[in-house]
Length: 165
Length: 152
Image (tube, rainbow over all chains, first blue to last red; front, side):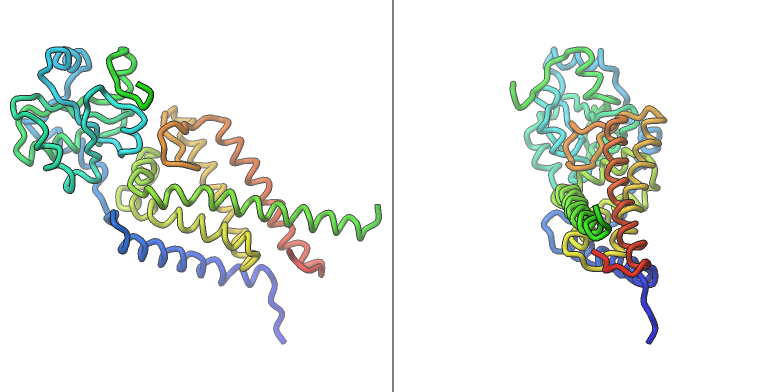
């Protein structure tokens, strides 16, 4: 009789574990409420921004001036769990991944004369770019992206909403 | 202490290590399954994978973690599970170290999808300790079997 060793067992067990995990993962994704698309163009935002005339990058000074003049609405492009931990005061949550589902619900609450500023967090985060382009494509005018928005807003000690506030 | 006692102690230790390792991986996987969208954002922020692999990784990796964790706890398919466990820990340590070296300030996405869990050398050290445990258990599974002792 041929002896099996842990090594020979591992050789078939590893691909089997991969296959079972993949089967459960993609099966569960299909039946759950919030299905995640298998592919998403995560890095397209920056190039879109460069080619879009309607989306501008706004500085934190300009954003703060508009905030205090009550001429702007902030939209948080980060996942909702990040938004719940803290966000720019009065900002709406519209995670980029869920933008198509939730955008109309949010847009109904925003006066058309307001300047829309999208933001996320991290100098390399371009979710705000992507969301700004998306809103522009929907027909919104006056849309800007505040790069690294959550961090710079906090650095300037500007008003925020947190679970404790 | 005679040889028999050593084996008993090692068997008990290995059993506990196996349970703890399995529980750690299950605890790491479940929050990511519950909030795949946030986890996909974290995978993207690591800036290691191409766009096409981000959502696939965010979907697949948490279930792989949970399945390997369950196999470790139940003691089923241990040779395959422990190799994957070590591979996962090496991959996590490499990804964390690479981003700390680059100075990228991102959330860990290790045991939760909340933004408060940032990465630092402490995070890497924690993973190195877990890797040490999984290497020890790999030795128990592979070396003890070869020497004729029943694996755990």
